[in-house]
Image (cartoon, rainbow, N blue to C red; front, side, top):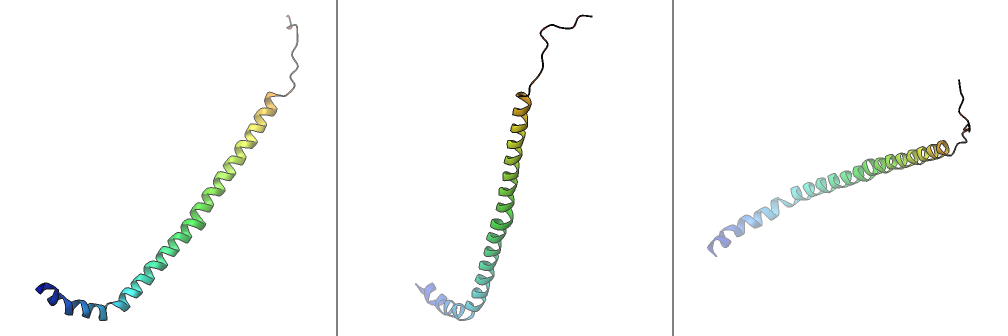
Length: 83
């Protein structure tokens, strides 16, 4: 209980002196968090989505090419050539 009374003037003094610094620090931290969220959302996520979309398109094109190759008409001779 005696410690509380001793710390009371310090707490009051810190409340009077610290808030502007804490407010600026919190504002900087909030701005940094917003910038980080914006970077992750706009740069990282969108680029990953774009890359995945392009990769999916290329897979679809490759499958179409493979299917056309497999279904191409091939002339097969019934009798092999004899030399």
